[in-house]
Amino acid sequence: MFDFAQYFKNLDYFAIIDLIVLGAAVTLLTMFFVHKRQVKLLLIYLSVAAAAVIINVGAGLSGREILTVSRAVFYLALIFMTVGMVFVYQTDIKSLFQKISNPHTTDLYSSGYGSDEELKHATAEILTACQNMAKQDMGAIIVIEGATRIPSTIHETGTMLNAQLSAPLIESIFNTNSPLHDGAIIIRGNKILSAGCFLPLTQKLINKEMGTRHRAAIGVTEETNALAIVVSEETGIISTVRNGDIKRYMTMDKLKDEIERSYGIGAFEQNKNNNKNRRIFRR
Image (tube, rainbow, N blue to C red):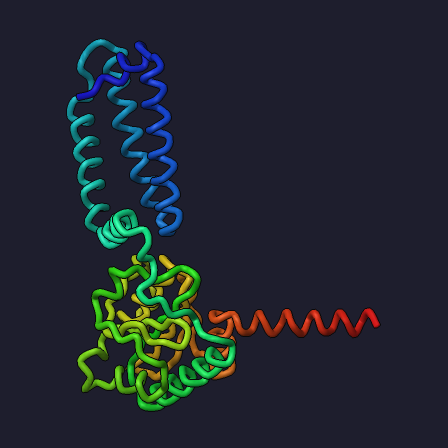
């Protein structure tokens, strides 16, 4: 095993470079886990790594083999956790390498989000679809993309559509006779990019009343700034999820506000009204 004590005794410029690289690696690892909201897992991982290093340094300073079994256990635990994280976050790793290999293909489609009028029309269509599906207890999960694009690896789990958004299309996708009804649809502006997509599931403990759709909605919003809308198949209850936080029992007015906020319509109109009020006040 690596002798850390001897390493620090012979500290030179090359060792300093090593320490800088180590610091950068720990910083990137910390940023990744903080972004994933898995700080507890990060602390456990760093604690195991620190314990392994401390025991190794202690053995080097004492000049004899001590805690041999403990050293082996901590090193094996570190390897096990590293391999486990590679499997758990393989989608993120694959997405990272895709971005590195193809830095200019960040968008699935070249189309934008649509004009304000198109986004208002898209909002109305989504509201109509959600209301109709809730009345029929038709399960659905709708993901409205935010500024952070949904990774292509998630789109690839479903069927690419790039279709004009409409209430009848959304309802037909989530009809139980449709082969795509089990997955999620991903919306960008006034387009349905893909359907039947499988989303990453959250690792958080959630209410037992909520099922896989809710877990998936929380999972995707933990990784992106998307808005996820869930229609419960059992109860017809409509929920929205943003940044991993779920709101249940949404009315149409509240749902409209959430969608417009996701599209930026509400903020735009609010700013416009505020500016108008300021001008009136100045007069």
